[in-house]
Amino acid sequence: MSNHAEHNARAWDQLARRGAPLTRPVSDDDLAQPLRAIDPRGWLGDSVAGQRVLCLAAGGGRQSALFAAAGAEVTVLDISPEMLAHDRRVAAERRLAVRVVEGTMEDLSMFAAGSFDLVAQPVSTCYVPDVAVVFQQVARVLRFGGLYLSQHKSPTSQQAGEQPAAGRYQLAEPYYRDGPLPAAAPGRLREVGTREYLHRWEQLIGGMCRVGFAIEDFTEPVHAQIDAAPGTFAHRGQYIAPYVRIKARRTAAEATAQATLLTGD
Image (tube, rainbow, N blue to C red; front, side):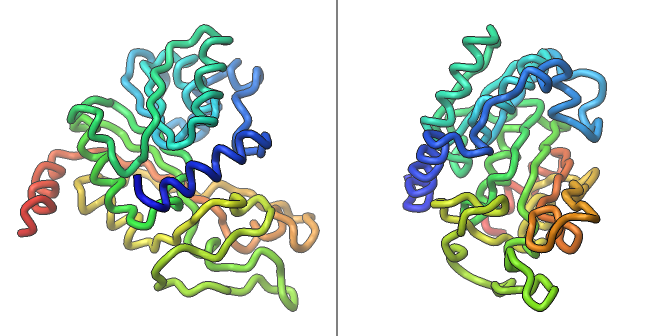
């Protein structure tokens, strides 16, 4: 396992032990309407029953439980044993069928090509230095026509300071950079203790297209509140969208794209 992967595995184990907000399992309210909770935009249609779903880098007992409750055949992969312990516990308590796999999003070699109809990935690509590797792995394990629903931190949000200066949120980090971002302070925008990387739009959108994904939709979930106090997450959200969601479909062109990557032509 790479240094950044080992570092982030330890960090997420610690966050899970402390019960940090992003490590809390699914609620009863969300399980009452699992598909709506997992897919507020309706990208998945009326049902995922019987679909083979990979919840990628998605431990914590939320994503896997919602898809399983909606009738999908679910595998969840995560780098953190403590996060996966939540998935096992929730699946046992709710009597849900969930396959749990410990591993990194950068290596999905344990899965055969075309193993899944859908790969669902919450915000997590920020924890790897080269997002292209992740997209290559996802393209391989998805069947032709399969969907990749992913969420990412906006690069602008990663660049900008968390607190306003002179009434403005200013860019504090360069867009073109190598190496991880500076260590995070406690807050909703960064996860304390993790090693995080900024990915440019050409790496996110272009990277998917280069391995044969067609982008079908793109949204910026709204986290703004007009009356929020300056310096709060909701106030900053008026100026900077913190996250994006991308709906991408694996197309037949993927075979050509993969061949190019492998041969270097």
